[in-house]
Image 1 (tube, rainbow, N blue to C red):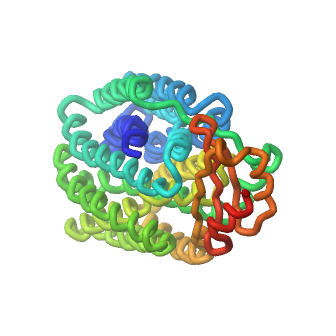
Image 2 (cartoon, rainbow, N blue to C red; image 1 turned 120 degrees about the horizontal axis):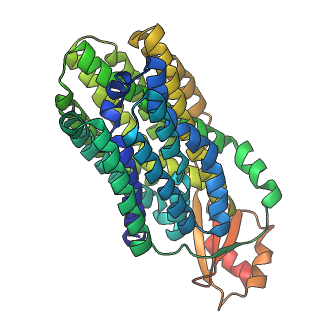
Length: 437
């Protein structure tokens, strides 16, 4: 598992490092540019997410057809171009254009789908946790280096660094990432794919969760540097002293969250815990007392990081094999849509009403969010059978289509293995094997 996951996690980590490294200082930098307003600042912070929203689903669908690796390569090239435009920007409008281009490299859902292709489902949450931990480490490094490099050499140098790291990610893609296995499915569902993906209530709730989590993240990065520097008189280069302890607490919360969700089945409990942390964190960040505000920052990182190792894995559990690219594309799109609206609404709230209004908004939304998550079902007690096509001819699998408890079956053509996914609370593996004789 590690061999397949680490290179892909490294690609995402390099890409996200490039996005994260500017976040601690971007609101301050954007406000100082020609023509800047708080609203345009919010668009500059979350603008990359708008093009992610528009292109994430097409990228996912294209990757289902032409392959994950080619799609990831193209997305990274576009991201490099956007980073160069940001580095050369002299006005807020040019910065926004560059951020839009950065977002046009919409590969997040494709990478998640590729990990799901390469890793057996029983290990998928661990794989997603490895990916989340790698990204979180890049996040921690970005929180340390961003304020230091930005204050010493200029924020434009951060964007040049972003372009360089994305270019390095392309090398990792071609040197270390294997091709995804060729998979065929037990039935063709092209016409019903979008209906099932968009109408599944559990996937809808996961999409909403990703939207709100990312919206609250963007709001936090809009508030934190402005409050610390302009309200509490922190120096730019000292911001890491707040970010790194909070990021470390976030990293430490990831493993317990993954264990409770995957091993104990407390998926809903982990999601609810994270939502409560969000509400408490914004309540604390209203305070003008530095210690209470910093406590709010730490609570936010804990809640955000508790969600990270389980959300993509949970969304993939609700999607069937032939829907993974589309479903994770939709899921990821909602996350980026949340990032965009978080920046857009945060800029408006900050300009017209102040930080208190943002905290009230987050608290009200969190209550509704908590109620909705109670309605979500935990995934079925799924288990997989791996059957060699040499022992079980392909035509026999049609017997399983009407069998109660069998969720789906599909074939890994590279390994010549059929995977039968079933609900172990409804049918046993032994019963399925008897049916296959």
